[in-house]
Image (cartoon, rainbow, N blue to C red; front, side):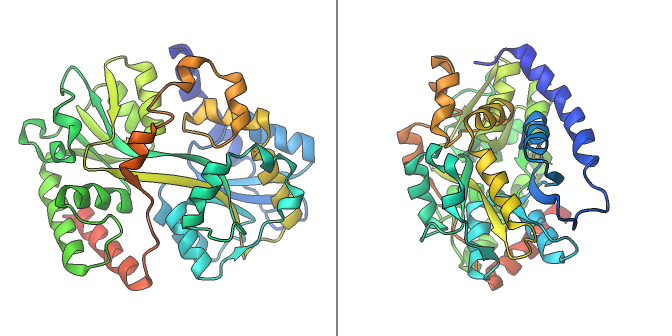
Length: 355
């Protein structure tokens, strides 16, 4: 298990990483030696990116986004020809259905053998023919809570997020699909429902919750919980693990109603101009050393089987980082919305944020 001092160093490293990434954002994005990468924020160790550039001679223009929907909007804007992207399962399915993905040449990925076949198999939900994706990280959505303020029984249900006793002490996840999932679990609806009446019910329940919400956050969630600005927060398992390392009073759970299992993967979009470089990037992310460094930075479950060689038993037994079979059985992958449902839920999300 990483020591707390390392977590502090990681928080500081984020600032250095951002500075480093910005240096790659020049006007040469379309040159033959520049790879254009789009990824979640705080989702790669800066030294890994530096080493990739040094060892391959390929420059990287590295861009970040906050939510899956933000990624889709950036891509659809068409102003940048992205070569390789990492995002979540349901949006990959959406883009595959739209014909936006290019098949991966797995023969050029010698490190692909490091990826757990079980996670590859789970990826069939959004990549049925195993043509387009390489898993990067996976995890769950649950509740990170302060045990001094909230007891375990209370957070055993998503309904705790509507408890008046915690007014202004709840951090809600700033993600359209994940926020909807929480309300749908409370209502007993399928988290992939496209029924407009059920989506309206979901929206109304989230509006009811808003009076108790301290803030809608994503990347900043664990920092907020570390500083004890809130009693509980809906967040991703990796965010929870990071927070728990720095504040021993924090704990994480996936409520009894169930939740989301997500798989984030690399893929090559139709806008790719540097295919060979994209293959080198994806293979590098599957490398033992790179996967280990990335895991120890982001603290999400890695599908790379070689990482275990470098981790202690406490880390590998951490159920927040590596969810148990029982937890995974309560979770479900998101399915892609059709265009009408996507537009409808996006409108509802904007209304909620403005409510």
